[in-house]
Structure formats: structure tokens, C-alpha cells
Length: 304
Image 1 (spheres, rainbow, N blue to C red):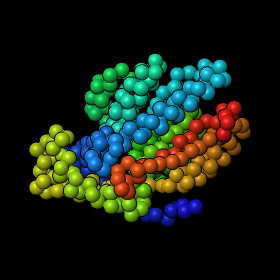
Image 2: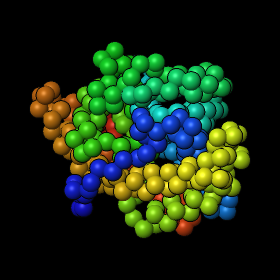
Image 3: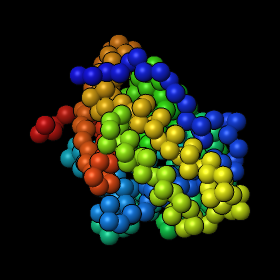
């Protein structure tokens, strides 16, 4: 198993505090657009829809376990970590709760959180939620040290195109913190450190010139796209850095094993006993691939 511990920690420009909002916001908008829109003929559906399938299945599996054990363990919520300006989360919340409504199930509450809260964007997204089930945390949330009062609520933690931001030590601490108090963790990435991802990301440079008009651009955005193409250049640079920093599912599960040992030593019981699965698939033809890792508290009684 290849574990790329020695990779240099490169930075993503639009994530830096010194990056001007006039540059950062259009890039965040573009990333959300790429998550939530189908680009024909290269995509059979928008990438977020594949995520909804998986998260919905995890939610139903946990609820089925509760029913099987005849236990009321509390209402399950989603806590999205490193939400940025919102990304695909509003679309994911809307789709999940639409499906739950059709199945006569109550909506799931979804919370946006980040070490640097984007309140203006989050307020807008929460007001557009059809079921008013999308909310946000107004204070900074470190995914490696989730505040104690949040841990008291039964929740599933999600990371959408975010887990690669953590260093090796921080990634392990994020997993440890989730194992202590969360019901599960879902990690999704749309890129990998391979040639296919590099080609797919490079293709976004010409594509961005076509997509910007659909995102209600400001005059500044138009200037830094078509006259001085800083926004497309940073989009590509940051995408390549993201691919470089992305861990394989096997790597994440290796870190999860280390995290489990730490949690078990702390608790002396079954707190570190989790079950893991991973997978992926093509989100953009021919080489754009999504990968995911799902970890859930192992309550026993399963066929697997």
C-alpha cells in the first residue's frame, strides 16, 4: 500500500487569508457549480448526486440498526466540516430530504461549519432550504476538536472535497475526534494524484471561460476572468494542489486504524471499533473519478 508521507505541503491560494475576496468568492462559486451541475456530454449526472446516494444509504443503514436494536439513540444529524462557502451541501441537503419526504421520513437536520465561518453565504443557503433543515454554526469549528456541546448531539460528520486540506497528524486527529463521539464519518474527494485527474483539472481552464457567465459574475469577476485571467489560473493551480494532497482510500483507512488504537487506549472499551468501506466511480468522462471512505460505529449484529 502506497502511503505518500513525504509529499511537500503545498498551499491552495484561494484558501489563504491573504487571498482577496474578489478572487476567493468566484472560485468558491465555480467549485460549487462544478459539484452541483451536470456538464454534458462528459457527465451522466452532477457529482453531488452520487454523494447523495451514498449518504442516504448510510443514514438509512444507521436508522435500520436503531430499529433492529429497538433503541432510541436520538435524532441523527449531519455536521458538515470545512464547509467553506457551502459548496455542494445545500444541494445535498435538499436532495436527501426530498427523498426522505417521498419515503415518509422526517427531514435530517444539516449543519454547516468551518474554522472560518462564512455566515453571509450560509444565511443565504439556509433561507433557501425547502424544509428549513439546513442550518449553520456561527462560531469557528475545528474538525479535530469539535466543541463538547456539539458532541452531545448524535451526528454524522461529512467532508466534501475537504479532507485533503489536513496534514498527516491533523487528519489522524480528525478521525480520532470523530471516533470518540460521532456516529460516523463520510469523506468524499473528486480528484487524486494521478494523470487522469491532472488532465481533467487542466480542462477546467478553457471550460471556466464558458461557465462564468452562468454564475451571475460581478464586473470584477469578469475582469479577472476574461481580461486578466487570474481566476481561471488560480482555479487550475489550486485544483492541481488538491490532487497532489489527496490521500487514497487505503491511506485514510490506515490512518483510521491508528486513530482507533488511540481511542481504544483512551477508552479501554469498544469506542474505537468501527467498520469501514471505500469506493468510487467516474464523475466526469473519461478520467475524473470520485473516491469516498465511510466509517461507522460498529454496533454488531451485522451480516458483515
